[in-house]
View (spheres, one colour):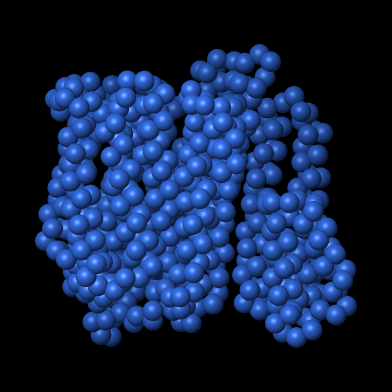
Length: 466
Length: 126
């Protein structure tokens, strides 16, 4: 490790992986509930399993982003973290708050949880992905402010690089957009309108900045390509991400009661949204192809390239598939949306967090790269998780196309539950693919415990080619 | 044709291949054909490699996409949801694969390296 304070990233990464395992287990439970409706009922009803699955995803990705920031900012700024103690305290606050929230979902009926947490004083609960009790949301804001203070002061005190500035911009955006989760207007159109400012402007806006900066950081380290080259690519990618993504929010406004012009604005700008992901793919492969060093951490390189490809497919291609208003008229809220959501989240955000963990964890454990056998195991986990996610997406897309046809497109539309029975086979196949994903995740975790033959770093400093 | 000009031509060929798949199908292919027609006798080995690959794979890809899609519709009929399901999955899968192979081709062209598209590019090696 080049800077001692980078060590605070380690618990964040460990917590992220732990919560990731939880997310996948609840996903499998829910996948089974699609075909066996009373599975684990009433202990874990479908709505609770879904809430835990999606909330754990968000929380573990946030842990991953924070860990990534704590790891890369000291190296980028060439300055120790402003306050490692604050980072440690915030870690425990966030972990305990997250755990209590999930326990609340599991142990108490949701309405009772709202009462217990005094939601009536400032009602914010009851909305998809933002189900957290108000007190938890306030906790998230406190953690985010403390985190931003710590990272911001460190960046201001040290070297300013494009990577760290883009990362900071993304993280500030993340915090600012989350504030709209406290705005809960009575009018349901207004409510949905601003709800997307959190959900969409996170994943198709500011999170893309975080993604680009982490990817750029890892590529600088593992390829040795000049920082200036990578920074130029980053400027163009983030510009395109923001140009397309911000007004692209309109693709969520087609059918919620917003003005009709959003069908044009949303269609045009969200049709541009694959461009930054396409550029990211060209960028990643270009940098690896032009690499000036053979980094011993092959697994991290694989994750970095995989991130670019899967983000392009999941967010770009599968997003475009149903983003134009005339198509979305039939497809919105169907299994096609679920297919897009799964591959986009996995490709863009799960994989970038796993990329930085793959790169940083060996360094945090005093190695330049993990033992080759551990890397082989990790690469197996990469392929198992990635291929199974491709199949999950294909099965859900198949289910979605049939669903749209039978339920919405034909002259004689069939009821929702009738159609669900007809597409049951796809849900079984999705569950099977989910089990393969879990196997990949188990191998991923196991790779951390492979011992022997580590490539110990020659000095305290990692070869910084940047 | 010197090395830099050959590299530029290779990049143009790969770019047109990708534009044909993503932005302007047909039009970009015509431009790619023009490029091939004009430079096929004077291009250096690198440019010829990329020109041949992109033209050949564009034609193969078009056939694989359109003929198979038409075949699915012929077999299943447009009135069946299953036809559309198979068609959309097939089209998206093949189309995305062709794009990703094109990205590799573009990266190789930018680096001044030769490239043969996996599987579909083999018959078009100059």
